[in-house]
Image 1 (tube, rainbow, N blue to C red):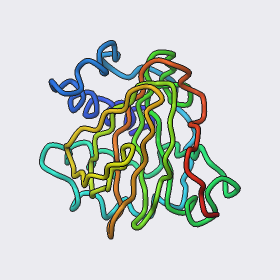
Image 2 (image 1 turned 120 degrees about the vertical axis):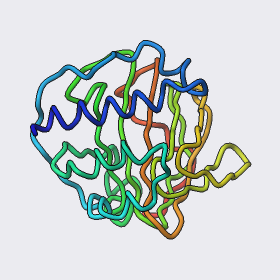
Image 3 (image 1 turned 30 degrees about the vertical axis):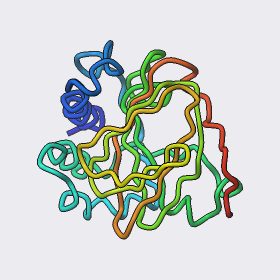
Length: 198
């Protein structure tokens, strides 16, 4: 199976998750199927946790997790550098985009990716112009929204309005999240609101 075919299979499962009532408004306008160009494979260190993810998924998220974990040669990316958050963060963070500025299917209205974080990783408070929906796929996170923190597990939905500060921390296991951005500058880097410890 080509990388594009694998990405298309992941996209189909992701779209199925997002068309539920909770996420339907943000997911409105997503293409029915992924159509694009194949990309070269690229791995990042956090991909070492892929074998752990299926056991950490819920029944609702497992089909997407299994499709994703069966495709270790997808095109992995990182938005940040060691100067931003330190080398340890880079070893425990990466994402694969399916739709958007960096994915196999270009879009200027939506950005859809799976983000993977290693255990004990803190993603500092940040904000961005696009509206965002996260669905944890495997593992749990402590979701920080303003001054509140809430534990979120697979299948739950997190929604961030444009420029709403948010961040999260993983626990003892890795965590994979489906991320959907809509509107705003989809290629712009998030604004970091919390001092990182490189």
